[in-house]
Image 1 (spheres, rainbow over the protein chains, first blue to last red):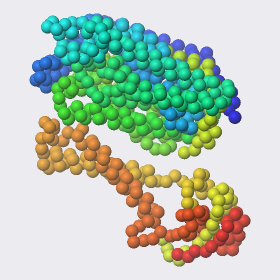
Image 2: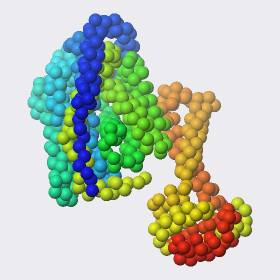
Image 3: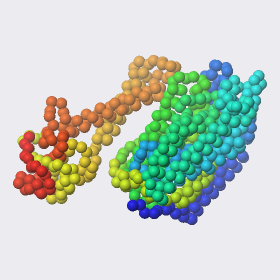
Length: 451
Length: 174
């Protein structure tokens, strides 16, 4: 029923990706140079902002126990500003792209668990995206040891010395979550164990589900579909917990004093809608290049609905987190948003975030026609992807850089480098797969999909 | 709608026959008034040449009315008419208004949409929708052709219906 179709990773596509990466490196180098030479001036400019945020924290914070914890975090130790910016940018991009990779597998698992038929011809694209998982895992582990002293305030040993000048009762109270079973302030065994375990489990399920999907091409038995569904259901349970804990570990622990019970959902929502947008962009680009003839406007419509719905879901989570903190007005909670609302560039990103991730997708994707037209999908999806890149920027950077944060060539360059490498890995993986499943039991349903 | 219209009503047993009948009858230039079926028939809308419903546009407009009304009410009441300090916030602070605004948007868009749908479908209070054949709610598909909007005679239309698989042909006057 389905003809053999393979994606050919053309040399010119590769060249384009290399150029993208080279432009990224160039911008990044330029950005580093500018940050190293002109950085002092920039920092001076934002010094007032730091003071402002410190005052705000101080005035709203009469509980002396946590005196301006966030403001203090960015001050005393460590690397020069430009190096901190590089570290933050590395961590920001890796968390963002790791999320897109794992969403590839999550999308497939959802399709199996829900016994969805419509997605049968496009399932190989999220599968290819899932190939990023091992790269993201290794990068995450290596990068963590590189950036930990600057990005993760809680790694500093002095915070846990009872009676010492830097002793921090709040962080000490959370020590077990990072360091168990070892002593607080040493090697964070529990934290590293979680990181390795999560990526290990994700990769394991990726390999298992991929094996079933590819075996189905060869012998056409429906057994593979049932096995993949079972694996997917188990994976979804694991992912439900692990994605949430990963969000606390990799994103929320940067603002160590602060916590939000919405954070796990918030990071997941951001990853998920970005992943959907990336899948859609790749599907539409493949269709534009003449592949995937069986994918019609009906399938694109479903993808568009997914993005539309989960943009609203993200906004719902965003608002649930913001609204409660705003209304309760408890200093140790509001400090998170004060940092983001009173400093540049976080404040304009804060509002841009809502426009890119809610207002624009909501209005542009509201009509049926918009979701069915490839040109419109190619407008909205990049908006959503960029928007959530900014979203992650604002989750990660303020806690590290405080008033010294910047967004410029350095950050954009780093983003382009990651995009180029990510796309190279994904497209390379895609070219090695059969582009469309050959014996998928739901294929007939999908070919007649009509909404 | 005017009274005393004359309709030719064809009864169909099977949705496949109905679907083809709709296509063939429209090809002959006959205007079909409406088709009633006990369950949704895939492709019937396209076969009848229906353009998409404008109900979503109505829903959007009702929703916008809700948004504006809710925001205006809250800002005016709490910000200007009777300012009160609640939780140390500004008189008119936006975030706490959003949940109410959202609910009101959903409420008006849902009510407005259902109301519009009822009116468009002729289901007004103190009225009774025209029923061409009650069996369209049970096991038969019913095609109604308005004599006034077609040039062909009653007999010709009956024959066309018969040729296209109608199991029964009736006349209906309102």
